[in-house]
Amino acid sequence: MARFGPVKLRHFISKLRRLNLTKADREVAALKDQFRREDRELLAQGRGDEIAARNRRLMGIREGAKGKLVGFNGVRFE
Image 1 (spheres, rainbow, N blue to C red):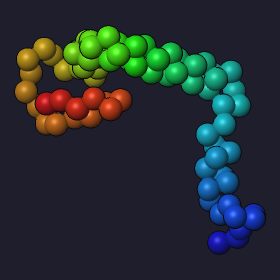
Image 2 (image 1 turned 120 degrees about the vertical axis):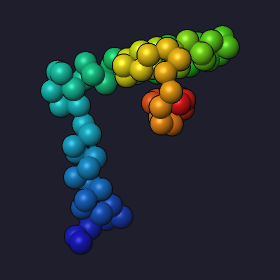
Image 3 (image 1 turned 60 degrees about the horizontal axis):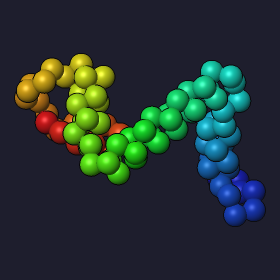
Image 4 (image 1 turned 45 degrees about the vertical axis):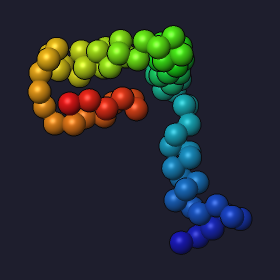
């Protein structure tokens, strides 16, 4: 595979694809950053259960439902 200095071409292409070139991409990235900041703030306050409950709701898992082990945004639950 071709190389540009120490960076492999496929890594370079992957980095290009991750750039937020369109307005929609930039908005999505900003929302993700906002949710991450809110999650870190809730965790710092000891309210991690609220994050897990919200993630379950967003994924369509009803309260008290049993299922396979799932991970979402660093939170794991069944």
